[in-house]
Image (cartoon, rainbow, N blue to C red; front, side, top):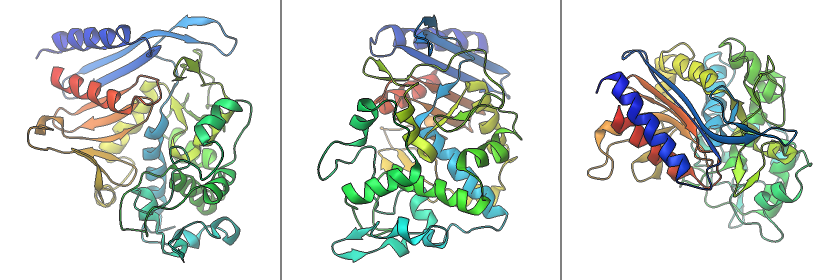
Length: 362
């Protein structure tokens, strides 16, 4: 298909999706291919400023990318690996203090905490609980806390401590798959221990600054290198915009990266073109387990793989996705980058399905 026709079809499909779903208040989509000289950056819907006024969605707005941020965390760990400062096989106990780790992973009466390696945290095979989705033994969960106490800021250690006191592990390390935001909090704390700087500062120093991602930041923890002239896009839980809630700081290393899509493109291009990591390191990050039919999960990255009938080979790509319908993938076959968000919690599957439709139109 010619680029102009593809752009028209993708734009029409994107606008139809947003306008047909009352729960999608705003959405953003960027599609880029160097090989095809194709670039499309779209925004649809409305958003609210911090002051409460309603404005039209604009393509250059910073967008909260939810669990897409896990790929940034994994790349930080991989860079530190290439610098000889850690190994994916290292126990997390090598980097974190005993007070934090005490009683963290007790399964059927046995404490497995010391057996958790960094690789287990990266591909969600540690067996640890997920503070964001798992139900607590008593009281309310973290989603309810996020909504009920919007002015409360969270520290990562506080989240880990709450998790071990209120949630149960699922299996011994390496013996299953359970998605764990708690595990990515621990990885963020490992980055802090190794770099001797806060996680958000490491993100900025190692990734945002060299890549000239001048409007990127970690929501609830930092400010961008340069203030963006456009407000941060609203992100919704139902019809409640929570993007300005201080409680969203609980996302941290598991998904707090917020940036305009053009800044995110700079990161994905650098990663796919070998400017961030050596090919051998990226290959190690392909230590995958099954996440869903046709989707595997490696070190901070999802890989969409062919499955007969269910997932044709034309969809093969890699990147990551978030619960807000956010996605950031590279499609090697088309040399195409697909980045966007529907900005509605629990829209993870809908975001991926829409991205696959965009691939069809390419």
